[in-house]
Length: 305
Ligand SMILES: C[S@@+](CC[C@H](N)C(=O)[O-])C[C@H]1O[C@@H](n2cnc3c(N)ncnc32)[C@H](O)[C@@H]1O
Image (cartoon, rainbow, N blue to C red; front, side):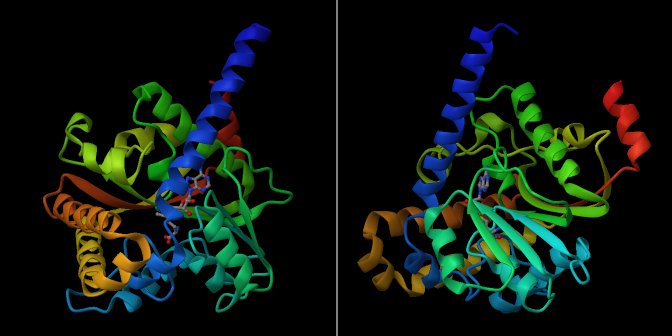
């Protein structure tokens, strides 16, 4: 590669990081108080794990958090990383119930980072940093990433570019894990719907610059780097979660309108209703995947191919 080509690739990468950060702020920096009105008390903003239609949102979110914490064997771990840590529900449990001495969270949202710093849990470090720029100073026994993968690729990426981004994610997370560590990943994905049929309303007004993966893209990107231990598609859990969020927002419509105005409230109500329908119809789905590093020898042979 010429220095000029290397320079323009670096400039493009920096531009793409800035766009990603701006897109995240567009969505998450609407204000913590707005989200507090309709999320559960832990401010978990991702698909819950209900044990039936009558379950309670808070209990269903706790069950989901436990699923991921147990998937990476957090009990007894020395250090765990949460990529896309939101308002810190995983970090709080790592520091509290699981007594993990070091818990690091990455987010692109300044408001989320300030919220976590304000809690001040022992051993918790939160960084407003893209995972592509993060350089950890030690290995992790577990890595959790819930609801962030959807933000990694961009709508105008080619299939090859999307897979390159996902592979970089798996290469980096693999290199940060101890040999007996694990990665627990939760993401929405395209299912029975072509990419071109995705809602422009959600893409342009709710999650600008975000793009969903397909299961095939995730599998190709992880090949030779990480072993897939389990895959679950819990799409009806997400339909349930969106319906719960929508009815809570509806119940607090007046307070929400006073905080962010009628247009934002109407946009969120529409997006939650549309998403619930998409999950119910199987157009989009919700994967929970657990990965583990291959034994070192295999990974080296695959990389050399
Ligand atoms: C839908 S929220 C999920 C938050 C949290 N995991 C939860 O379940 O409540 C997505 C999170 O991913 C973060 N995020 C998105 N892209 C990221 C990136 N490239 N690097 C670090 N964090 C990112 C956002 O800042 C946000 O905290």
